[in-house]
Image (cartoon, rainbow, N blue to C red; front, side, top):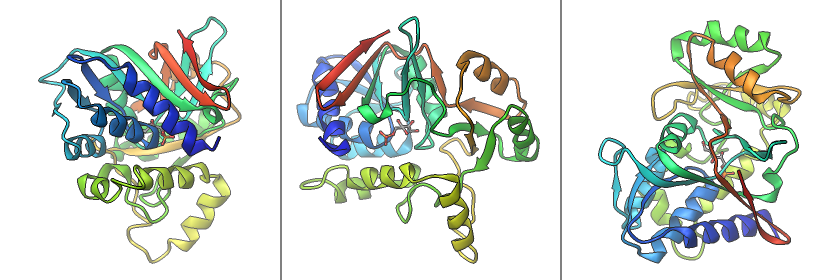
Length: 282
Ligand code: 5RP
């Protein structure tokens, strides 16, 4: 089973769990995109809140009823992907999220939901978090202060650039209804999946090479800006052995808005691989 097939399988399974009449939080990213498409196809009577402009526009383009958190401050379930999923010693679920740049709104919407179902292919399952660079969303003007503080915690922070992830595709934040329409039919979710492939190639060496190529290209040399107008520092490191401690240390840095460690938030992980979809309940 390819990674794409696993994503489709788990997205379909998650969509099947949604019941008529519920309030659903829509995640962001390629797996969440597939989930939104599957959910839309079920034509349920549901109300939704999206965790990014991209997912909002996609859902609306598919005929879904999307409202704001102000209108729907309590959600029955939030369903989203993750960059890493770790089943902790006590059975809790620990995640890294934010590869798609939507971690702040994702955390806000997830925190408003009674249940948070994370959907992932089995390549995302890890024994220890941190091989994937931890995204940290920061206030723009705080960059020169936050960067050395994160380095002091043992990370190598790298400012995310507009073209660092999607390699020629629009960042997710600007991937709206137009691109959603383009991908309907035979290749649903294609831009998001292509984006993921680019994201998975985000090694420090590749990023350096891209920075060199980017000289003279204003879009490539401008930082990626989130839906909330912030920057993201992708923090490379040897692994996050104590996620709670790391989360608290990062949170204490003035200028940090949010980090991509989602600890004890997910209630269920659906992970698709060769053996089908496995369930890990927190
Ligand atoms: C976006 C996210 C995504 O959920 C995460 O990056 C996983 O994405 P994908 O399903 O494309 O692998 O956190 O900010």
